[in-house]
Amino acid sequence: MGTAVIVDNRPGANGAVGVVALKQAPADGATLFVASSGMVTFSPHYEKSLPYDVARDLVPIVNAAYSDVGFIAANKVRAKDLREFVALAKSSAKPLSIGSAGQGNITHAYLELFKDVAAIELVHVPYKGASPALSDVLGGHIDGMFIALSTALPAAQAGKLKVLAVVGRRSAIAPEIPTITEQGFPGVEILPWFGLFALHGTPPSITSSLAGEFRAVINAEETKKKFASAGFTSWYLAGEDFSRMIQAESETWKRLINARNLRSD
Image (cartoon, rainbow, N blue to C red; front, side, top):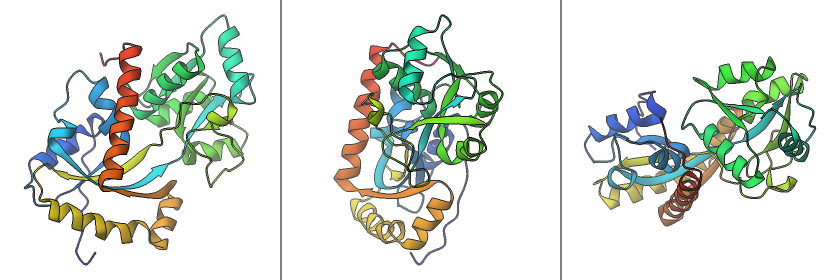
């Protein structure tokens, strides 16, 4: 793009810390924010309070990529696919336990959506990050979790756990694994994406120009290869297409959260 880019990592509070930093910068397009789908579409409905308002503070520029998410199970779980897992969950005297990377994390969101579409009850066990949850799946302390497929695949290939399904669409790195929908449970199709946002008030001429610049970058073969090596797939969306996707996913999570009375503690 002909300019230097400085990456300023601001971890914490499911991305809220980064938005606060963006709000302190001028609305001139020089400072952008990389947001996950969860913090833009799930957290605003799940959290009781946030230091940002998506509609008021953020302007969507482009969606850049999505990651493959798998539903994994511990080897102790007597199920070789998702149908058998659901049947086991319905017949088990003790509810199966499913971990997440934390309350309000996108892995928690997928769990609640899966429970809803499969009409099963599962015990949610939140962790402080995906790594400790994965360790407990490997150790057989919990029964499963939703997790980035690239993170879980090495253990699955070594026979240490089972990947029962993937979310949304089959993965290029493990195309043999069927989706949740393909196994008879439609409705868990939202892909976890990562997009670029500007601060509200940034001139449309600037956001439009940025979207055009990023299109060439995101669709470049070199970018696709770098994304793939990190477990992501390039997925360019901009303008009204990106805004419509955000709105549709936000409504899906809102309906689920209201129907199941889910709120942060």
